[in-house]
Amino acid sequence: MLVTLTEILAEAKKGKYAVGAFNVPNLESLEATIAAAEELNVPVIIQHAEVHEDMIHLEEIGPIMVDAAKRAKVPVCVHYDHGATFDLCVKAIQLGFTGIMNDASTKPYEDNVRETAELVKIAHAVGVGVEAELGQMFNSSVGGGEGRSAVQLENFASEDDCYTNPLQAKDFVERTGVDCLAIAFGTSHGVYLTKPVLDLNRIAQIKEAIDIPFVMHGGSGVSDEDFKVAINNGICKINYYTYGAMAGAEAVRKMMEEKGDQKVFYHDIVAAGKEGIKENVKHAMEVFCSPIL
Ligand code: 13P
Ligand code: ZN
Image (cartoon, rainbow, N blue to C red):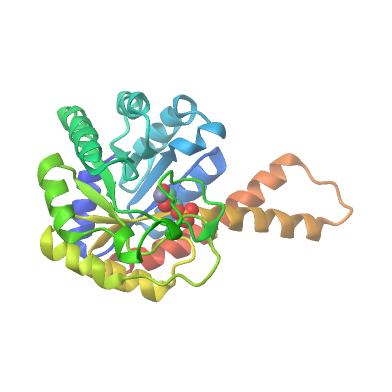
């Protein structure tokens, strides 16, 4: 059943769990993600990231995502992730997406406020929820091109300079009317080069200043323990892609090795990849949604 970003996150906030938000740049990952959510009977957010336009266009995968969400047995939000192009954000709304993210965190603060407020006005007119980002996710990883906002830590005086400032978050939310906020506290897109060190307290400090659902980006590689504390401190949406995609590839590799000299068909590869993604995202969902399981 198709639900809005606002609805799905309001339930998560109330129930003290986080909804997994998974990028689905192909049919296999889309079907695997919905199947995993249905098997566990948990809500889910499926996303198309703007940087995945080179894998599949919004106009191709978007209608398929919306249709799959409508047919699903669990609540599904269809979200436009890391939207950096105004026209594509509007296109996502026209295609029936129920959530959009305006990614302007690397732009000057006032530009981020203005752009986000403009999109909120358009999206709210048709009942679509909006996510925006404040603070900088620095680049301590490889791969993971979903975020345009990854920056080098060397360019900042300290980590504190990149992380979301609680008072600025309050000002931002009040001036934009945004429904949820992606906050920076040490996570990074892609595969972490070193064990992530997260400022999990920062989430609670931001929540004290402004009590709306918060979003963690760069979920792949974060420990189950850190997820639990982050959720307890106010994270209601966790964006996760890289590890699911890697698990799909690993399952294909294993299947090919097992087949040895036997004939392999392309549909065998697709099926193995899909199963690998499903098992991986299922584990993530179990961790994120444990209070409702
Ligand atoms: P990972 O690919 O690091 O899990 O991050 C996903 C993400 O933040 C998508 O917006
Ligand atoms: Zn992201």
